Image 1 (spheres, rainbow, N blue to C red):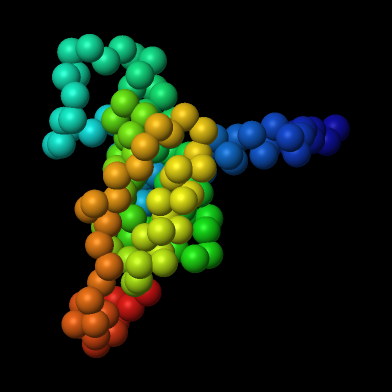
Image 2 (cartoon, rainbow, N blue to C red; image 1 turned 180 degrees about the horizontal axis):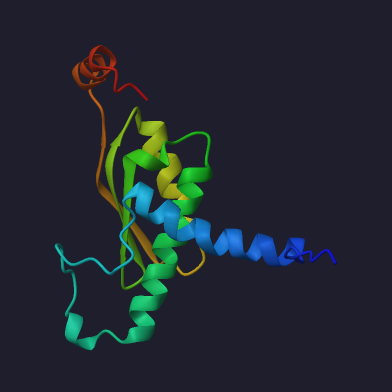
Length: 137
């Protein structure tokens, strides 16, 4: 008698892969799944679990959109959310990438405002250094 094991259906497998992929993407990309702690902009005592969950969801959504985008490098941009305000930081190649990253964040459901003051454009010296060291984008 031959015993065969039933393989999971495609929709179930897709849900499992998606569920396993998002935390892996977060881990690899350095995504902060907790609210902003280093730069407290409001009093944390007044935040509810729902507020934190909403901020985490916004952070995950913005980061995944940046990672999927062809015009910006999502690996070079950090995303944190606090009280529905998205904070972008890191280094990009030019101002158009800053504008595009801000646009992606602003177009995300639940985002009230985007702060990109910590998202800087690499200088020619930075780009030359990266090219020489092999860290070029």
